Image 1 (cartoon, one colour):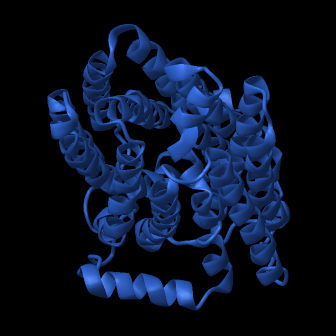
Image 2: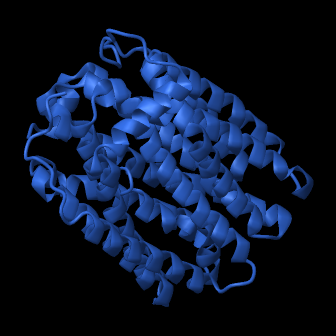
Length: 406
């Protein structure tokens, strides 16, 4: 497998696409952490933070079937740039969130950012194989899979520090600036971000039916697009991150640390398990193990009384989650042709974000009435159970040692 540093240094277009994703994902968390602390302070309730997270994921889940079709029909570079600019405009609305009466504006702003992300995500995932050579794709996936984790560390930790020192509004300003940088980097990518089309993609609904027929006829693809839902169904833990930090006396900095170590785990996971990308026959087993480890990690968080150990266990859970995400993306890229890739990735993301939204809404519904540790334990148990059931259901499936020639 080519050196990851070699892929970055040799390939200008991949370097710029990777840089754009870094600032986009970093800006996302630079907003979210201060906002999740600000809203309970303004309203006196943890419900608003839960609603923000649920809106962020729920809107994406609803839109992804449509946005995946857009990624297969139109210029992906233009989609990425316009999505960043739309998110920039949405961030500006957060400066009006100053009281309990203006708290609903946060939902509007985050909802608008979620719309922009729902266009960005499938286009970026589908574009990656077009900016690297086939031999570089495993290494590029390991690097790209670390993007979210890297910038969750930077965005969450710096967002927590800036929020603690100067308040949330400077964090919002940094976010807006980062989104403009991301748009500029993407605009300078020279390679086409999609393969040449012999025929135009069909309109939205026929295109979605084509993708669904493709998935329905392939048990392996069906299995791969249900992998991310395991961690998604356990994602309600994020609702109680600020509350757990307060419970341990760590405050806003503790909340930032929880999100930061979450990102650190997601960063390290893809790199540690990079050798698995060269052994496709191992992928399904490793996917099941990574799901199970995520669940076990949060079961441990629910029972530990020491905040440092909480941080370690959150790291372990998201080490598994980051590996799970990268392994499933790489497996899908090797199974799905370019003309369908945007739609299949959109369905993959839709299922994951729908699972996240369900988990977060369930946690939000009980956050003011149920002990925070019970929410953590419930989320961990759901994910661990899902992992066992998924592996039983997929035990007869295998991945070829080499990707399909598509």
